[in-house]
Length: 153
Length: 153
DNA sequence: TCACATTTAATTGTTCGCAATTGAATGCAG
DNA sequence: CTGCATTCAATTGCGAACAATTAAATGTGA
Image 1: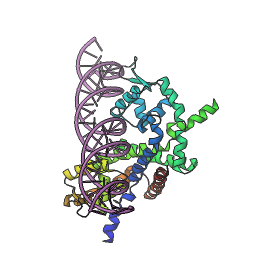
Image 2 (image 1 turned 30 degrees about the horizontal axis):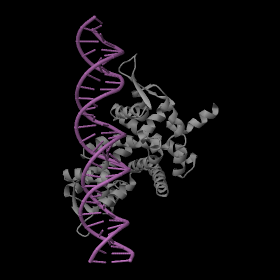
Image 3 (image 1 turned 45 degrees about the vertical axis):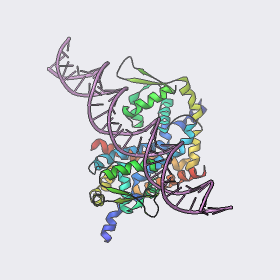
Image 4 (image 1 turned 180 degrees about the vertical axis):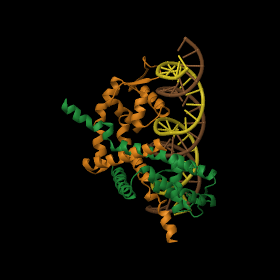
């Protein structure tokens, strides 16, 4: 019986790091919600805008690689951003398979409204920048090992 | 200009801990996918089963509090688990507002097939149990602080 | 007891996320 | 140049996730 209980430890919800990550992601989402509502963005849309504020005029594929998302997710999302007037989607002339995503003036301007968001998140996290940076690095390292395992599998 | 670059650091994708968590959650999901396909479960369904293997015959609400999910998510998910023959949903007789979720024999039996899953995840994580436990605790602590901030906000 | 608030699931509508497929453009071997 | 594979975005279908609403059951105060 002691052996059975020990075996069960591996299936306990509280012992799953994946559940920790899963539930933390949802917690972040809920904290972001009211902040992003003021920008009329969802969280995934905010990520795309972050990517574009760094590198504008890039193919859809590049955004996908950066965010680990595919066209099935990005195509409709980008159409919504275009409908909102934040980006423009144009076929590349050199390679007509590619769709280039470029910020509109409105999309660039939104960056200024977004500047206050990270500070609010930091406050909700209730810990130091240093701690968050360290934790972030560990999580990224784990993510990259998981993705590497996928490539091998 | 140096000042503008410094200000932009806060909006850089790679500096967002939320994106680290978000992308790690998706990476976990992709690693779980082939393992859970063999159990005919999605990842959220797997979480519900983990909860039920620990505490059977509980109200939907309890599962929701445990997993941080609401009825809008759980009601259709549990109907799918019921359709798959893994759980039974019954109105409580003491309080007819509540729906009690109980494992079927098949649902209990699935636990044995699930025992090999955590080991596979550990291998894909490519690090020690100790490291994972420590990281998990930090992530849970962050999640709880975020949820606490929501309550205050 | 009666009115009213609270609790609990279910429902509706929108947005992700991904697998699988389609179709067009491009690259490449012969 | 031809034939075939590859790349890329779009589409379809399904399962979350959540806000907002609805409806029924329960609890509470007067």
